[in-house]
Image (tube, rainbow, N blue to C red):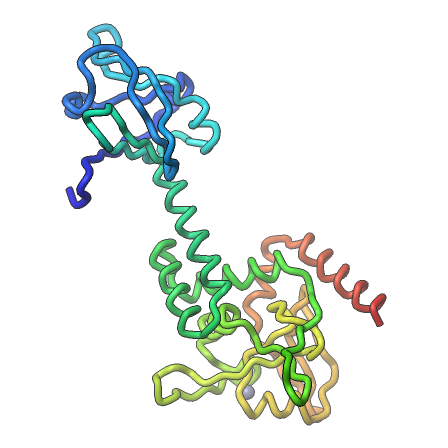
Length: 291
Ligand SMILES: [Zn+2]
């Protein structure tokens, strides 16, 4: 075993879940007392042990058992087939740790996701997104699409903060987490013309355009663009904005129609994101009221 402390895993079965007990395979019987009695259990990432009852192997039920797990089963929503790991923490004190692998993994994922979203630099965001990709075993592109869609559905449109202090009032740049998600989703390619170029550090060059400069970093307000298309958005005659489910899918620049590659528009619709549309509508109404 790799870890210092001995541990084994058991797959939860519905009959044991119903009875609130854990059956211990016979090959680990030496880890447990020979007599019926109390053992100490710490759960998951907790510190304080609880006293539970242990019954050694008997010929009627043909297994040794730990009783009194019903509360933990329901608290963690343990289901048939879940992997439960049991660690021998301190044999002298009859102290064991029982942990739901799924819970620990989800918790680690959530911590990584929070670090990712709070990243202060692009390289920090990059590191955390890669860590999340390893934890979830999802390819970066798929993960970026999921995370961006999640951000789009969870966050309402917000005014874009101004950065102070500065001689000219400057608008806040796109947070690193969102920049990195956009880069992964689009490979750094312009959503209008697909152009990008490789920078000296090997990464694709791209800029992020805010469709409404006063509105914040909601993903539907952002476009990955090349410098050429970005300049056209800023300076040319831009009209005929075409939207699907709140996402820009087409625009006319100086009389020429362009379609906008928008993978999230299809996801939003596919997932029947009525709630998302309501959020968008509410945000639009909110903005009108503010004006
Ligand atoms: Zn372009």
